[in-house]
Amino acid sequence: MTESNWSSPPGDTIFRLMTSREIDAAELADAMGISSKDFDAVITGRRRLTESDAAVLADNLGSTARFWLARDKAYVLDMARLDERNSQTSEETWLASMPVASMRKYGWTQRGARAKDKLMGEILAFFGCGTLQEWGQRYSSGVGAVAFRTSLSLASDGMATLVWLRAGELTVIDRDIPKFDRAAFKRILPGLKKLSAYKRPSVFLPRLVEACRTVGVAVATARTPDGCRASGASWFNADGNPVILLSFRHMSEDHFWFTFFHEAGHVVLHGKSHIDGEGTVAMGTDTERQESEANEFAQDVLFPMELREDLRHSGVRPRSIIAIARQADVTPGIIVGQLQRAKYLDHSKMNFLKRRYRWNDDAHVPDLID
Image (cartoon, rainbow, N blue to C red; front, side):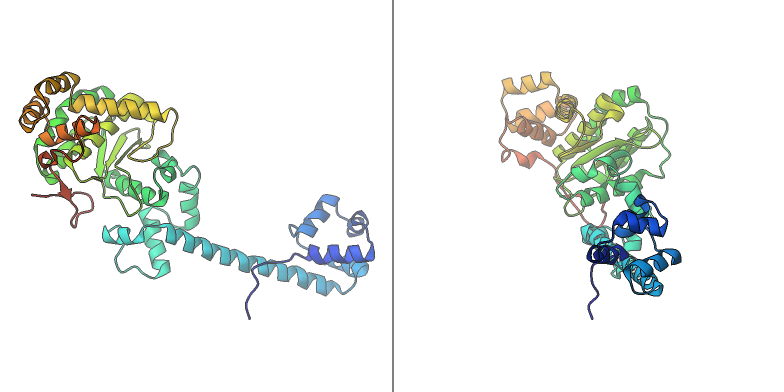
């Protein structure tokens, strides 16, 4: 026999019998010795029937007090059953929304965790939660604190973006990071672009991470799960330290370094007032203006205006790009990317000057394509 997916309170039966016997609600409430408000709660199922209530109902509406108490108990049991079913449905919906395949592939959950309860436990542990209710309290209210406030609007699949942001948070959570020094961070930024001279992410990333750590900025990288299209994100953690998360989404050096300086621009220019998801549809006050300012900041660091003018005069050729890149302390590939972004160069042109990456086993650091 299939269980119903609805439940009827005793009030439904009470109301039907009152109507057929032409008994007034105020009259029955008075007989039960309760207020009209409490009587309305009985009708809607928000108030349980007492033995006294059941006796009055039996006298006025028929049947027995035992019947009315049994009717009330059946309603309570039905509601409990439906709550359990709804809870199971919520768990299944929650699990279905997670990028489970990517999380297994990247080592964020165990590959063999296929049983529903075990998988739920592992994903909840990834988020630092013990129950789905705790996860809901932490992430569902405006999606919770810090960057998670906007994560569900950062991409077409907000849950995948939330997983990516959490992966970045876990990367930096145990780091010993000094107090944030905004002036010092701004001061070291022009020198950080020189790290682009190192070909391999495994070489330049530790240097970038440590340089930023010394001035109180946490830099992390993580591969995006399926469904997340973010290139980068930045936020301030509970200790007041900026966190910059980068995804290597386009797997090319020009995009990586532009994204880093874009996020650095938000940290320097906009501080805690802005939570960014570069490469996505982000939320926030005056977002369009702030995005434009961060783009301009990144461009000015990587490819200063005077050098842009010099290149225009000398002509956009491989030899001139290499010469200008040397003056700018960046790689030719970064200059190509900037020219393409500014639409001075078609996106199909001179890409042979760019270094490109690919993911292997490490979900945080890609390899160079030699």
